[in-house]
Image 1: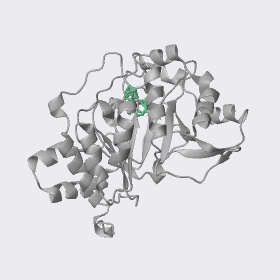
Image 2: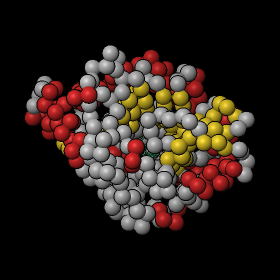
Image 3: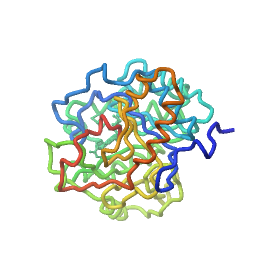
Amino acid sequence: MSASTPQNQLVDRFGRKISYVRLSVTDRCDLRCVYCMPKKMKFVPRTQLLTLEEMETVGRAFIKLGVDKIRITGGEPLVRQNILQLFRNLGECDDLLDLTLTTNATQLKKYARPLKEAGVTRINVSLDTLKEKRFRDMTRIGDLKKTLAGIDAAIACDFEQIKLNTVILRNYNHDEILDLVNFCIDRGIDISFIEEMPFGQNDHHDRAVSYYSSDQILEDLQQHFELVPGTMTTAGPTRYYRLIGHDNARVGFISPHSHNFCESCNRVRVTAEGRLLLCLGQEHSLDLRHVMRANPGQADVLEQALIDSMQIKPRGHDFNLNSQEILLRHMNLTGG
Ligand code: SAM
Ligand code: SF4
């Protein structure tokens, strides 16, 4: 039986129940994707990051309040030292139905099996191109072979779902949409195309010029496949389509610009520093690190703070392609 009752569930002013938390476990990364980080990234001092124990405390408090899905993200989660321990500890919580990971897969060859054993159910892997030189350009320092080896290792472990996350930028990789879908069909995995979001200052490309809409991608794919809107939901903002004749792979779209998904928002995020973000596109937040460090060992104080935070969850985001600086946070700190 679930430990949460209607009185201690997380419900915001608009009646939306929060059941999904994305926990960023580090702002650091072994890649520098051009839409995510500037070339010279300034990371948060380590002392300001939550410890793994504090992250577990936050996770357990959310689970007690009715959250049944936690996604571990970053930065690159697998570069955080001893990260497997956090997966193992959260994986033991009976009321947590879905423990998922978003990763660039550079270290998945080593970690896929232990993650599966720790209770991870599903993995999202970021991959924007299948061309080695382009991969290096788009990640600035990456080696495609490592990521592909990581994907193969994950496939061998039989997770409930493996999905590629792909950001399409006009004139960078929009010519690979079909190849990436075929890559997924060949391996029996899913793919979600994500519209670029305006996080932080971008020193690489003009986001308005590089914008390639989900509708355009769908149109491109319809030249080659019959796509039918699917019924599958994963508690996320992805709109899935089935590919007729290819039952082993689905195509999804995450479209913050062209299809606003705020109305059904069921999630909050916690940054690597312990800042609870009530909305990806707004600055409303609560300092959970302060709450925990000022009240050590007092789980009830943390839980009450989470319940109270529901009063400041905004109705929705306010993304605007032409106002590139509306958000100074970078995606790696926010947790994608
Ligand atoms: N390092 C891991 C990875 O790349 O999968 C996890 C963190 S990353 C920030 C999570 C997701 O955010 C990735 O799929 C990445 O493509 C996406 N992302 C990063 N910056 C973005 C942006 N400006 N707009 C849209 N998606 C972005
Ligand atoms: Fe690192 Fe992920 Fe950001 Fe790429 S998208 S720089 S892999 S955190």
